[in-house]
Amino acid sequence: MREIAVTGKTRVCGVIGDPIEHTMSPVMQNAAFREAELDYIYTAFRVPAQGLKAAIDGMRALSIRGLNITIPHKVAVMPLLDKLDPLAERIGAVNTILNEEGTLTGYNTDAIGFRRAMVDKGTDPAGKNVLVIGAGGAARAIAFALAEDRASITILNRQEEFEWAEGIATRISDSYEVPVFAAVLNRQNLERFVPLSDIIVNATSLGMTPNSRATPVPADLICSGQLVFDIVYNPYETRLLREAKANGAKTLDGLEMLVWQGALAFQLWTGQSAPVDVMRQAAIKVLSREK
Image (cartoon, rainbow, N blue to C red):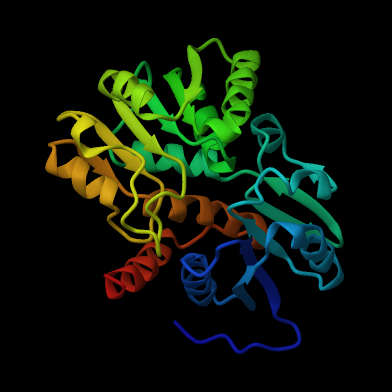
């Protein structure tokens, strides 16, 4: 694998979010660009909520080829774009932008990335009772992926943003004939819904570095035989996953979803298939050092 020199022709991609220091996307994408011998470079930009419009204007002005969008911008970025892919529009969240000569199109690779991660690990959510914790951009994509597989879905979100959970439930009900229910995230509802769930998905940032001691689900509620999927990938094994494993539950970390959504973004920006194994190993190498 040869090194790619940065030149005046180098195309720039990146990720915007706040916080952003934890991201593994630059490690993965730059490894992929090197492997494919493409004259691209990828970096991270911390963009607070009030700076989002300026950042998207800057994408046009600087001819940045592509951006990934992470917390807290996946929904707020939508009206700033020129076009939306039909899946992103249906979900109501964008995590990837493609810049084609100043025309910005929003996509959502989270939904496909989530599903690919589940299937690759031998889990079929069809007909399962699935509890999704959170109602942000990632949770929207995950809920739609589950609806595609005809799962029964319960969405819990904190009281201050409960209307987000209701909005996702309404969107799914309008598009799919699947059971979907929204409730407030509190101890009472966790006690009610966790034991009834075949699959539990943390789609929040709870437990993410640097707040790695946090967890969205009390350990005493998790049962043997459940699958617990935490989309947080830094740390590699979150407190939620450690406690779930100790209780006999199966676990799935967020790295696989990250890798697959990143691979799809790579394909959108470059027109080439992504070297998925190279991306995965690059991320694992860094996460292993950070333990």
